[in-house]
Length: 142
Image (cartoon, rainbow, N blue to C red; front, top):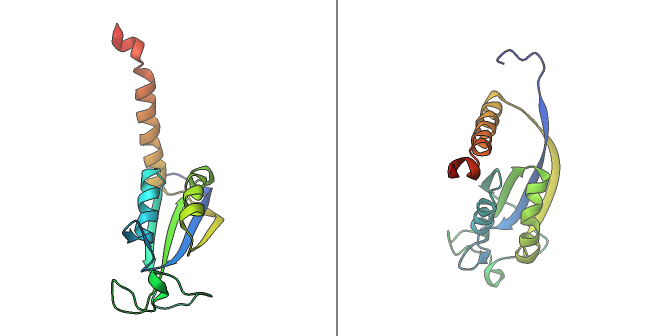
């Protein structure tokens, strides 16, 4: 730690979407649609994981088939995980409420360790924001 004696922690919110690999929305896998929507909303970051097994209380996907159209294998579970501040996660919830018809959506609070990398990135963003503030349109007009 660069001169830090006390570790810093921050509250974060996890969004987890449990779905199947062959669930389709607008001609693309649902998990890809979730990631694209999260990117459009500029959420902090996300990961898609494919399970090696699992079950659900009901079948899901295209015509409720057991085999996946992508792999020919059984329709394996897929989990999309996105981590950000609560207010940012809330931006995608209306979209999920509308389109996650065959998925389980969880929102969980957690705590993350603030790393030196995170501090450096925040400092860069603050510096960029300060540069934008100090270059106002009135100054450019003069």
